[in-house]
Length: 433
Picture 1 (cartoon, rainbow, N blue to C red):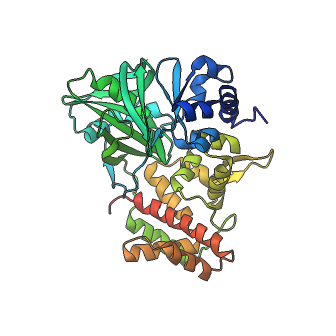
Picture 2: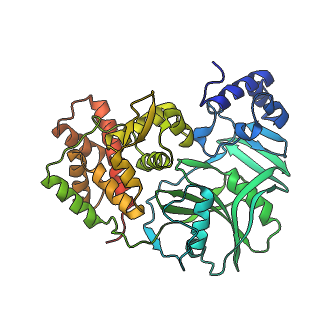
Picture 3: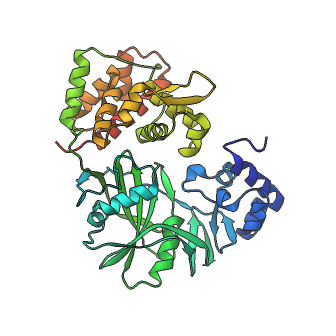
């Protein structure tokens, strides 16, 4: 069925693949060039070719192992290559607190609803200067522009292709020049497992050809009050997939609120234990391993009175099944509820709304209290704190069994994995004691 909301890109690309025999052409020639006019016969090209992360890629591209990149202002190359780079699976850097150099009345650091506002606050607070180690930093370039001309190699496994770009359109969220370098920043206000390398690589190639100073590609992810900067380099400037992380840092804007520290977590556990609380709202913990995305859903609902499941799916780049998992996780915590009227619509509970009105520090303390209400999670957290490292999935599985969770072994193991991921998120977002 064509035209259903949430899969318009997938529907349109299936038609184009069949009409132009794209898969057969790629198999025969390696690459297939498609024009914006050809794409526009089905849907607006800017919507059909914007894939910030691999979760947005239409199913037909995933199934065929294909990617798509612009090579001119009006054409795109489709082939078997990898457009995305997965974020590194390394321990997260501790969160540093930045105090703005002077108060600004036109920026509310607790109400940043767009990537542009997050980037402005990172610059105005001095955070960006701190990360780049450039004392004097000036905003110089941003917005859409031509890519100029360059060539590069792109690969997927043993398969490699050569692509020449000539004046394709690029967009830079923010360019900041200091005494020693030009930083080109791609900013996102949602979490993902990977990102589109083109958003760093094309601007780098455009400006490194004309700058005497070094050009530094920076990826900024802003979520839950945390600014996560990652600086990348390309080991071979002519190889799209040679991207490598140079350094990363996480920051929050300073406030006078109490912070979520390890001692604060111990106090929360003691308080809940004294009340013998064992709250499992909505049943057993749902399968939703990335707690940061649960917070993203809360942030989206804080901006709208209510959302449909499909709204959450589109905003968070989820499939509808993932949207259901993560919304159920927020329901499990007692922070989201289904709207009584209508079908498939959600809103914050009173507790959820109160939590989201807090600043970053107050919000995380309240989220920790909600997360640790189920006794099995408190037991797992205490064991992790005492040991100085996360306990294993098997150990959490055994705790859940002792606490009376009566589901199949496979299901309990999956939910133990989620519980461990939530504990990991909490520990990674602690301030220093």
